[in-house]
Image 1 (tube, rainbow over the protein chains, first blue to last red):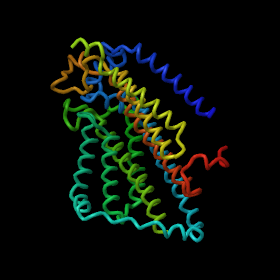
Image 2 (tube, rainbow over the protein chains, first blue to last red; image 1 turned 60 degrees about the horizontal axis):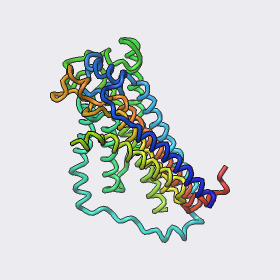
Image 3 (cartoon, helix red, strand yellow; image 1 turned 90 degrees about the horizontal axis):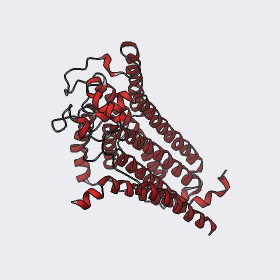
Image 4 (cartoon, rainbow over the protein chains, first blue to last red; image 1 turned 45 degrees about the vertical axis):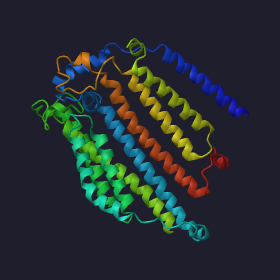
Length: 247
Length: 126
C-alpha cells in the first residue's frame, strides 16, 4: 500500500514537471545555431543530401561508432545469457522431463507462408541493401537497412523453423564489417581531416549513388553489421525456443 | 485556422510523448510480470523519442533532406533541426539493444525459476 502511494506521488510529481515543460513550450521559429551550421555547410562539406546522415555518419561519426559498439555488446550479452542457460538446461533435462511432455510441438508454417517467404525473402534483403546504399540520398541508412535485413531473417525463421543459419558466417561477416568501419575511420585520419572524415574519397557528383565520399561505404558496413548482428540475436532466441520444446 | 496556429502540431507530439513516458514508468513500477515491465520500458523509450523529435521541430519545417522540394540555398528556412533526429536514431538503436538484453534476462530467469513474476525473485534481489 505504502509502495503504491509512493509510486502515485512520484508519477504525480513527474506529471507536474512534464505539464510545466509542455505549457511553457514554444515551437522553434528557426533552426538552432548548430542545426543551422549543419544545414548550411553540410551539403558542401559532406556532399550528402540527407543531412541527418551527414550528422550521424560524419559530424557525429564517433557517436555512431559507439552506437555500433553498444549494439555489438548487447548482441554478445544476449549470446552469453542464452548460451549459459542452455548448458544449465542440459543438467535439468532429466529432472524436467515430465514438464516438457506437456509442451506441444510447434505447428509448422502453412504452405502459403513458406511459398511467400521464398518469393519475398530476396526482395526484402534487396530492399534492405537499397535502403543502406541510399542512406546519404534518401530517408534511411545503415541501421534501418540492417533492421530490414534482420526482419527478412525473422521471416525466414518463422516460415522455415528448421533452416540453419551459419553462426560462423554471421560472426565473420559481422567482425569484418565492424573492422572495415574502423579502418575507414582511420583512413580518414591519414588521408583527410580526422577520424571518420568521409572526404578521403572523391565527393563525386552531388546526388549520385556513389557520391558523398566514404558515406555509402561506411553505411554499407554498418548495414551489414547491424543486419547480421540482429539476425544472430533472433537466431539465439529461436534456438532457445526450439531447444526448450524438443528437449 | 487561428485554432491551428495556436495549437502547434509539435505540442501534440510532445504531450503524447510525456503521456507515454508516464504510462511506461507506471508500468515498470507496478507490474509484476517481467514481460510487462519490459513493455513499460519500451513505451517510455518511445515517449522519450517523441519528446526529442518534437523539440527539434521548426514551424512549417520538413525533413532535412535536400531535393527538388528543398533547394540547397533555401534549405535553412525549410527544414527541421537534423541534430535531434540524429540523436533519436542513435537512441532507437540503443533502446533495441537494451530491450534484447532484458528479454534474454527474462528468458534465463524463467528457465531457472519457471515463473515471470518479479516478486518470486526476492532471494536473488541483491
